[in-house]
Image (cartoon, rainbow, N blue to C red; front, side, top):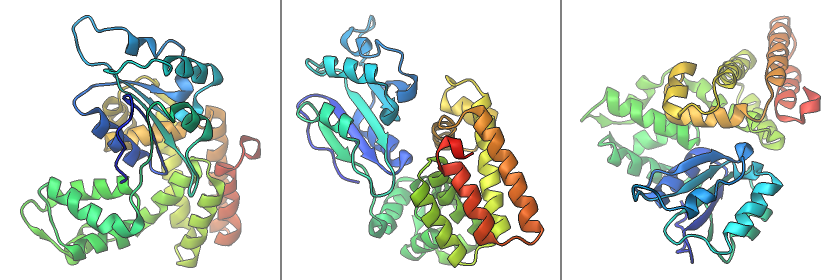
Length: 318
């Protein structure tokens, strides 16, 4: 993860492909501060006034804007006005999740450059084994380099999924040496978790990246019904999240939606917001059709691209 350069004021644009890493970086910047958190798509106006108004009880103030790419024009104008004289004691953190190989959103980067810092947040694929070992040590998990490599081979490069796996291992093997064999026992039969990456890309509406991910799975001879099962499971989770109040804290959202972790609740809420309820229902009908087609003899390489295009393409295609 690239370190942030010291800004001229506590204003940060953190951008990258992975929402989990972005949140980690945001809270590393904020330290002990508890920010007000606002989704870019839900900007109401006047949010920056909280930063400029001293707290009655003297607590530190901070504003965290997730999915900043979805900020409307009036929000960008408000931020531009605020950034002419930002409060030096109140951090403002903007998070922007971008597609694979994309750059920092130009409008946001222009807004922040010269006032604060614009930082890409990522862990290179080659650095993931070391990242895993570092995270394991923080959890007092005795993960070996062989075990780290086995986790990557089994679960793929999704940092959020890897973090969840470390939590599982720390709970299941406290004080024990976790080797590749231990990882194989713990996650035997979970090769379908490679589909997580496909689901993340598809439900982020990144069609080119989703199609590349699907092509890789099909080249590895992953069973079409297993891939479709993973997509269906994610879609059902998003439907549950979409029906719950948008203002629920992540812990409560995870509990009520039947998710295991707060980071899943945050990620799934971000993905669900990209679709209307009608679109999600239509997609559920599409995967039901795909299930019947595959079981009737249709081939994976015909049916699954149709499903992925319906999810990740423009709304009109659903």
